[in-house]
Image (cartoon, rainbow, N blue to C red; front, side, top):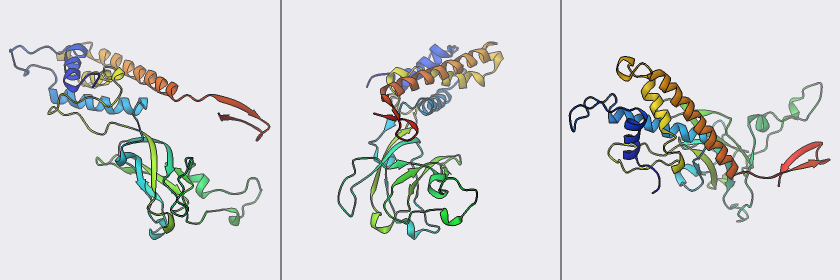
Length: 276
């Protein structure tokens, strides 16, 4: 596998980035400023943060992450079609249903993306008065749209960061059991551990060293100036700025890979643009 494995990253972080070479006894690491456990923790955080900020991990094949099964939303109280996604998911790009259980036909297009207001607060445009009868809600049936702006749920650490995906309208019993195939941006699925120094990052090999700047920032930002050096905080700030620039560059590169040409459209709905 190309790139830098954990052992090489750990060595580069300690020796190259942090210049932590203070062991005085041959074969002993007791005089190092940071333990291997600390540095691996910083590398894990850097790995997650780089993936989250740069969007370089896109997934549509990992079943546990990219597939959900619809359930009969009419059996829940209140009626619901909300699904908690895998904790690694940062953003959902698209969603597509499996074969229609009524017709047996597989769809050729994705279901639409919308939001809470579009689902629950739609009313006829204009009017200087409000008529509750103008509000419309589709009855339970086949999912036609999805959103991720309904709510977030707590992860295993109690942080409210896990995405909740909502299908609209509420799934009826006829359409329960369908698979929704997602394309997502996600974080790494597993953390590094000292028990496996041959593990490689999930982000592309071009960015393995880039992510170490955040690990170096974390290490230096909490360092004792008397031990790490008077310039430790300045070095930490420099590493942070470098990391942020690497994330921006990586995201731009990823966006270029998914670039779609546009064409102008006039007289089709006022003024608009659309993908071709």
